[in-house]
Image 1 (tube, rainbow, N blue to C red):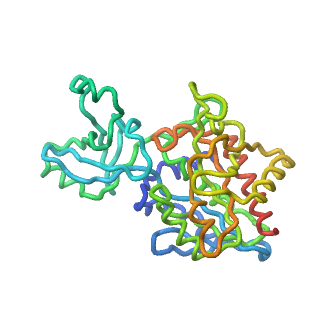
Image 2: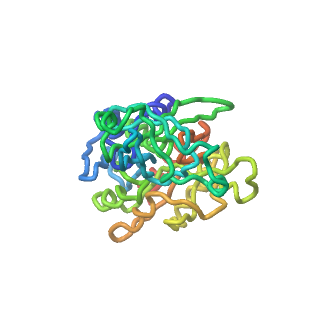
Image 3: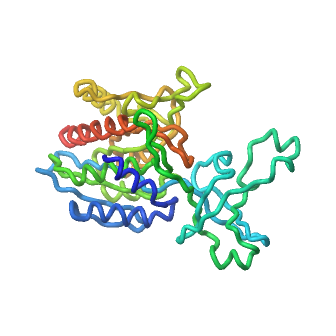
Length: 340
């Protein structure tokens, strides 16, 4: 996947339940290379013809949505109250530039001034109930001309490449996975395969469940971003996984115990083909595998993830070499799953 494709994907706003712009872009990229439908929730189900039919029906999946916020009220002074959409730590939101609504109105997340905090408030992390969104309106009437209840609030983030192959932007979780699937759909595949670009992963794996039910696969490969804690003050197993060490192949997380045979096969393929790989040193997190592997009569499932620092923030950080390793391993495992 090119950095340019990743940049385009990440800079599109698409908080859970409002993925339309992401979906439109993906359709524009894949329409000439596959047959596709959009299900009632808004997920894309794309069938790619390969050189020949596969022995097994394989589904490759990534989610289109990103974490964000939703407007819950407009106050008399023209500021907005919001609730998080997905798992956001309120500490990463304070003082951030955001945009709201379909017109992407620029605004800022504010909180009580430090000198007005009580001693007890200073000891505790802020909560979303104590934050507000400042859109620059003079009062409620002016704000109501610009925004409505239920409008999504998105982090505003620049795409940047820095250091030795590092990339920073919002929404790398999981536009990274969408980018790899776009590449695979545009490529010549040895076998027929189905790809699902699903909605609402960040609020409970909601799009993956009906998509998997519709596809009814034998095997599923989930492409995702996963938390790396390779930062100061974290050591040993607490680092979970690390940037620069390759694709993350999980054996277990909080929503899935992954197929043991597929885990072993992926490890062997990575070693033989010189693909960087690692596994998590903690049982943590979860992804759409949690919904997919228990769909219908059960689906043999594995996940390949890119390690990502500062997940669910405006400044996710990944390394380009890890993305390359994920794409190589995904292509190899896709072919193997079709043959098993």
